[in-house]
Amino acid sequence: MIEIKNLTVDLGSFLLKDINLKVGKGEYFIILGPTGAGKTILLESIAGLYPIKSGEIWLDGREVTALEPEKRGIGFVYQDYVLFPHLSVKDNLIFGLRQRGRPKEEMQRVAEWLADLLGVSHLLQRRPDTLSGGERQKVALARALSVSPGVLLVDEPLSALDPQTREGMQQELRRVHQRLKATIIHVTHDFEEAIALGDRIAVLNEGHIVQVGTPEDIFRHPNSEFVARFSMTHNIFAGDVQQSSDGITLFVIDDSEFEVVTELRGRLHASIRPEDILVSKEPLISSARNSLKGTITSISDHGSTIHLTVSTPLDFVCIVTRRSFDELNIEKEVEVYITFKASSVHIF
Amino acid sequence: MIGQIWRWLAQRRLTITFLLLGTIILLFIFVPLTKTIFSSSPSLLWKTLLEGEVISSIWLTLYTALIATVVGLVLGVPLAYFLARHSFRGKRFVEALIDVPIVVPHTAAGIALLFVFGENFAVGRAFHSIGIDFVLSVPGIVIAMLFVSVPFLINSAKQGFEKVDERLEKVARTLGASPWQTFFRVSLPLAKGSIFGGSVMMWARGISEFGAVLVLCSYPTIAPILVYTRLEEYGLDYALPVATILIIICLVVFVGLRSFAYRREKA
Figure 1 (tube, rainbow over the protein chains, first blue to last red):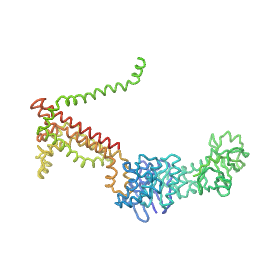
Figure 2 (cartoon, one colour; figure 1 turned 135 degrees about the vertical axis):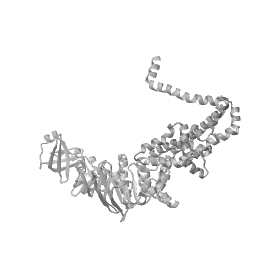
Figure 3 (spheres, chains in turn brown, yellow; figure 1 turned 120 degrees about the horizontal axis):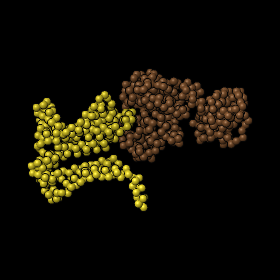
Figure 4 (cartoon, chains in turn brown, orange; figure 1 turned 180 degrees about the vertical axis):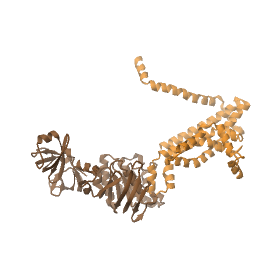
């Protein structure tokens, strides 16, 4: 367990002020904040790599505020991997053990076990500069785990990767977390990443923690504009992905369901961009697989576009142009149909 | 056809002009060196090389410059690392100070050293009491070479350390490495190419030093001073073979070490 009490860090142009966090053992904790919010420095401060102004850091009931980074037992993974370029993958993995003077057999065993855990066994003899981004990130993660840290800090681990690799790496993080029961603090600016991975999320804005809660809490009741704007424009739902008897993949939320396209199964999240939803007065005949009936509960005017909230009873935010809005001739409490493609739903 | 050639040339005016100007300066460096090398017959060079005075002066030059380089490594690399990792008030001043030996006339540098390391002065007396004298002695040659050539090593090592991502050191710390282990296992190995290159430059610069050494120690005689005294006392014919041998040794050593460093960098 790690506890951060009243941490204040001077970033030159602004302060990270009165940061209080309590992360339980084995918890996957996300710090979510816009770019430039000082997330990296916050992690460096926790690891003892950046001088703090005031505050305390407690790790498993022991105060580590004054300890040097090498004595804290806090692992660190940087956004762009930062592997030792002069060492092979294997030597990167056993760097920490070698500094501690561990026996050769132990280093060999740990290197093989970590490489196996992250699926990089075939890369052990390679140099970091010959690896792809995803491979580097796995090696960086394995290296941080090599010294069995009490807490693992990961800084934007997915944002330097291309979209396909990113999804794989996200699964990898979740898998490693579950297998090792590791305590992880992960910072990101990516809302979906935060919702997909986090047991709990802390929202960092303008140097303060403005909200802490489960992903559901955060996107249902956001108290920062940064989060509110995101959840407004993405129609996020938490539910179950299930396979129906006739081979269709369904996203089920309480009594509602719609069709989706994904290989993932289980407790997940779905998002649909408001501009991908068609609004009509009569049911549409089209190739789109999802058509739901609902009532308009709010209409807000944004100039050239109109934002409608349609309750099915799930609340969908839809964006229509002013012209379509005029042609549809709709108002509050009117019944409409909303239609979207199964492939427009992003599952994460 | 001619129109085509003309157009081809016209499109490359900048490249051609720069190439011509560059060729002039290359020839200016290259011609005197090769002319010297080929104006003495191999048999005369061999005979000169066998002269006791020549051999001992060349040997003296090589190893005093090497000692100066080793001292430079021990004292200069830590400074280079410090400067690469810290910013403080007056850092620019310190950096300018390091470059001063390159810009002052070297005879003046020799006199400055004499003022500190001469037997009539505190530092010189302190060393004298433990049996080290700097005037007319090998240690004098070493400090003269050290003074004028160590900026090359410090600057090169500093650039090398600056290129090492500081976060590599931070990661090493989180993996349990102490600051010392981090320096010797991460920072130093990653900067070693620049440090080696700087050492080669420093050694070469030491070998070629004349003015500062002349002030502190004209005897035992290093090779550049030997060339000069032979020229003064016996004329060009006697100075030329020694100069030639010196140039050849410097070329061989320098080209050899440079290509070694280059291969290391690529590997």
